[in-house]
Amino acid sequence: MLSLRFVCLIAFICIYGGCWASPSKPPLWYGKSTISDQSLIGFGNDKNLDSAKAKALSDIVTQLNVQVSSQFTSTTQRQDFQTSHNASSDVYLDSANINLNDVHYTKSAFENGQFYIQAEITKNALIAQFQKEFDVAYNKLNPANLKKCRILSIKDKTRLAKILNTLHLYADLLQTLGKSSKSLSSFESILNTNTPLPLAQLLIETNMPNDKISNDLAKELGYFYRIQNNAAHTLKAKIQISNTSSENAKINILFSILDCSGNPIFNTNVSYEAIDTKDALYVASQRVSIQLYKKIQEWIEE
Image (cartoon, rainbow, N blue to C red; front, side, top):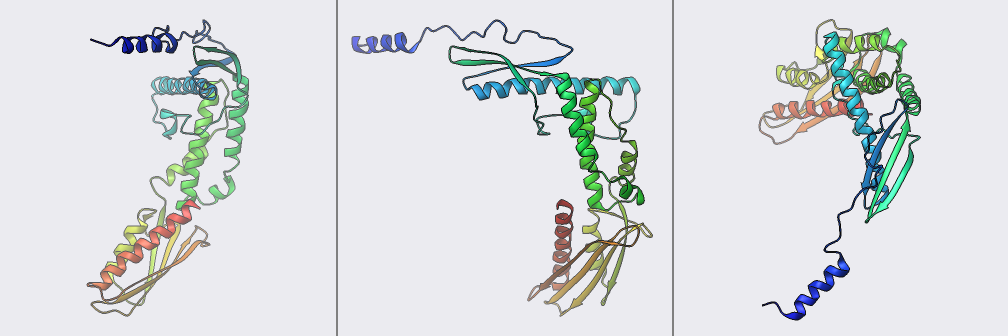
């Protein structure tokens, strides 16, 4: 049997700790349908006020996601066309790091340890924000430079794809809100020309012709370019092989990328020396080619 002292302790905890407290009920206005042609409304609740506000904002963002996704699906079904970009079919504003401006917290309440928040933002404010973001991204494009040579460098191709993804995101959001934006078709055409990778010819100059080195080099460069004779862009490699023996080899590569006008847009130098290593030339060839890959990747990400 439970001791009288233990029973009294349990009763004390329940009386003052709220064992039989009724569950928290939100205020009557919370979560009610508030369909409006002028604004979007979201709700959030949490023990922490800032967290409740953040959840209310997230609710608005979710509504935008649903609207964009629904619009894209219906447009695709209606027009039955093959889209030229991937961003529209799966738009997630959270991952795009979009912070909504001009949000007003129109209602709030604190009930049984919970904050309840109603957030609202007008569609005109959303249009103004998204149009501004669209214009900022659009101005990063360089139409004259892009159209001068439709075959891009891998760096320009990567940059163009990233900018177009941003532009498509805001264009879709604006369209959802009834606002059209500038056409992106000319830039999409250039990107498609360079997809999956831009074309470039590979020119190799070496003091000691070696198929292994040429193949390793072509393999690593193939991650950035489609190699084709007489292409507009040129990948130029000057290979110097020295100290060769069965266990020693040194390879130095002076490498350049030239645009369609023959102007150098990237220059680098990579070197690797294999010492007291079995199949030294084989090892040096692999390592120096991988070094070049890393240099190009760093250049793209600058």
